[in-house]
Length: 206
Image (tube, rainbow, N blue to C red):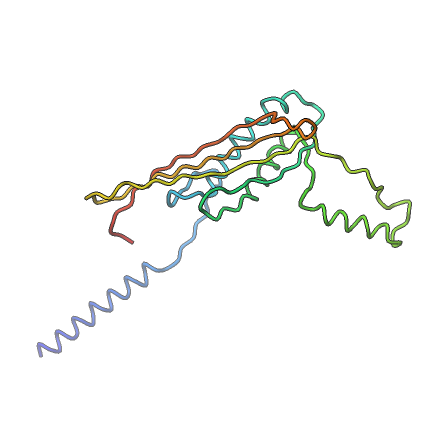
């Protein structure tokens, strides 16, 4: 009798644990605003990209040389070098920077990514399939006046090993951009945006 009671009790406890685990593992979703600063750890994320881009674009369009230009000079972006230890797609940074600057009306951009496709289309139009009246004119592309480049760096520091219930990590990110005059080779503008974040995690936990 007691053994049967014990077996039933164990069975009920195991069943309750399984139900709790299944309930805790169920997936949920919710919509978030891209304007909210959301961080799940100390690592680089989309909120950091948005903050960095906003700070640097504001600086670029409100300082010389672009602030004094009304003819929308042509810029070419040669990318942001990733000098961090993380796999960060810096193309997303340059895409957002280009979009924000174009919306400000302060500059135009050479479509460097599509240069090969532009050349293919040009060759096709001059291959005999397109009438001379409608095909594009060669040697009419606009040369860039400025080149925009950048470097993304990071430093990570952890607390020394000591007797404590939590461990802290300090993460530093810095993005530096440079606008270079292609005619003279002179850097006409440069600025950097920094993010410093501290995370605290318990030694024991999920």
